[in-house]
View (tube, one colour):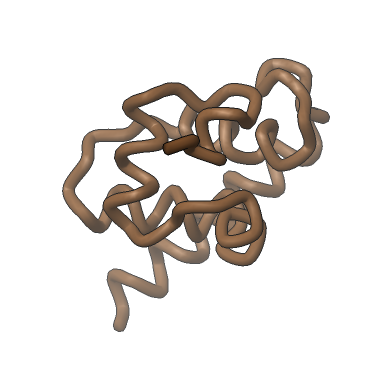
Length: 91
């Protein structure tokens, strides 16, 4: 059985397994959740993923190495993550 997530740039076996555990099995589902949503879902499942996973997902969706993401986009992702974490803490 082929794993669509493993065919994406930046995502390895562990990343794919974490994403599968959150119900993400395709590029379309990953796109729908977005890098921040997918990363938060992985963390919520108790996996000790670093922010590099969020950048890896963002790069996978753009088909670029995560180190080549626009620094402004990375900063935007971090801002979105902060907002998401504040919502989770307050709600």
